[in-house]
Length: 187
Image: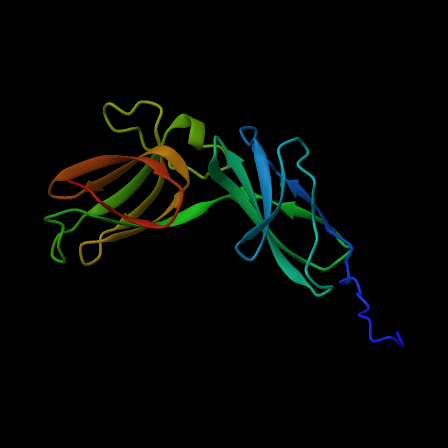
């Protein structure tokens, strides 16, 4: 403009990335899409189709998280760019757990175990071991040898997850909500 006025140019808008989750567990209530750590879309209606608007037209990694009872239950990742449509396979979300207890030192031979109750077993490869006494319906999801007093386990997310250390003595404890990497210290 001749008179020194300001011309406002709208920011560019990019076509959304259309995402359809695949293999959604029956218990899932909502699916959210994340770009980085920021939630960009959420759907609570099957088939949980989502549209994410990227900040630019470049390829972006999108993380889908499926929630069951408010708990991150499944997740899947895909790389896509503006205007693309993708199907995203979901798998059970797993977290890293360091399991230890007083007395389980470097010289103690023991095994750490993760046991899941029935509601949290969907989509998880399980061992055929019988459940510990008092925990009917629980199934063994992971086990690892204790090294230097710690068992490094990969555990699916869940509620009321039973952890056991079995060695010269057996100790157990239940974590009411397992939704992220953590250290568990049994009594």
